Image (cartoon, rainbow, N blue to C red):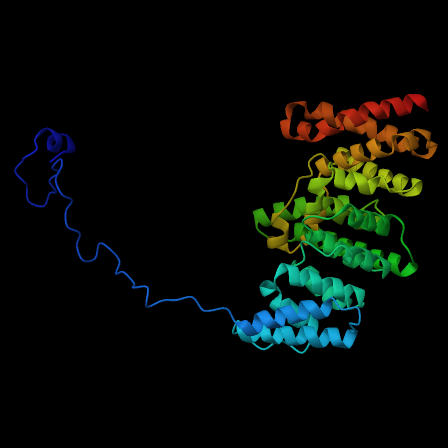
Length: 384
């Protein structure tokens, strides 16, 4: 019987094997298998919190805040807490190698406690623990002194690792990171930056070799080509300190490049640091002008293991940062004859990108915040 017939004829003769719809009638009785068997609340329950774990976490946090904390005491306390955590969660016993134990337990560490552990480790020069936490990405909200401690210890490579997964930073932390990269404090710091650039070179060569691999599939080859372009852009023509700046502009912190937070940090830079930052940003403008086909390649990390592709600053981040620097240091830039060629060249390239992007809305939107800066650049060129 059709639905229309059931509505117009409330008392039809039921046909064998067919369900009769009667308006106002009670629903059919479900069969035994129609509904799942209910589970009474007495059968299941949540495991109660382990008081020993809470006590161990509280004791660790209190001890790490002590000014009398030593390296030996720190390692003992951290190893003891990781043991209590593993026991409470029924995990295998932690390794005697403390950094390895930290990496294993990282997914279960509370963010607040992980941040405190990282700050204490940096203060005590236990940089292997800081690296383990940073690579595990469990300190998105680092303590305010973490970046400055790493910068003072001539470890810009660890500053890069922290920036890579930082969700938000204070202006003092951004300033410490900028000065760490723009004004290397020692030869050791510069050597660490050279190692960071070396990793970019290795990744770029790996991407190039993937492009040449005839056994690779079509999709993998296309991803390798896009990754090779990005890594080449981020490596060629940049100094080692400038490569480290990639991590700042490409991190999640880059979302605040046009906010008062980064503006406050940039305003504290001296003349030499401002000139270095402007030259760095002008290089990126030139790279995107020369390679307009460059696009983000998030698949490269999972498919090819090229995580450096995530650290390539976008055109939007670069243009917003350049506009912000011009806003904060316009008078200094007007009087600095050394930056004349760089700024005038960047102005020409941005205008050409804007013209080419008239039929590409998203790119034009990225260049929008830089429009006022282009006008100021024109004024600077005229003044010179």
